[in-house]
Length: 219
Ligand SMILES: *Cc1c(COP(=O)(O)O)cnc(C)c1O
Image (cartoon, rainbow, N blue to C red; front, top):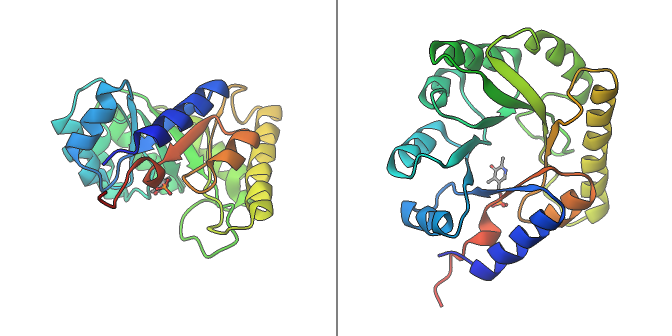
């Protein structure tokens, strides 16, 4: 079930900050996505390629689908024909495979580099000191276009830690723009249900919000 007041509240905030709100619809039904679509929502995020493909096939074709979860290289082909933005490029190998599948579909796929910012043992994301090295290789791929950075903060209640993790990623983005490794209008995809307010203050251009927008309990 959709939490409409939460959706309206976050959408209004996103618009106030001129930020894109992605509704993370993983584990949510086609019906609920359709309801949000009818309210005008067009950007949805999923973390599994196969679930994303199923939903793409069932829903209106003007939805902009975002791949936000870890993508196995062998699954890139499922989403390559239509994916709007891949947020989770975390290796040269994955970037090369997306590039190859994009070429097969005669398109250029926009991508973000996922950078590891959390202190906890996060499995995915490029470490901050490898970002320049990765970018310099990936920039040569003709059928993907790197549009910015994505990060997931530590799952903690300590706002100070989340703030500094987002802040570090914003500084990294600004430095990469400075040395022309990223375009000036590059994206910063940070902020989930628990930390989106911090992300807005720290320079998010894209929010990825799921659980806050859906009620799992029946009233
Ligand atoms: C699930 C998920 C989100 C949304 O998380 P919520 O806490 O439900 O808002 C955002 N980003 C990624 C990468 C996710 O996997």
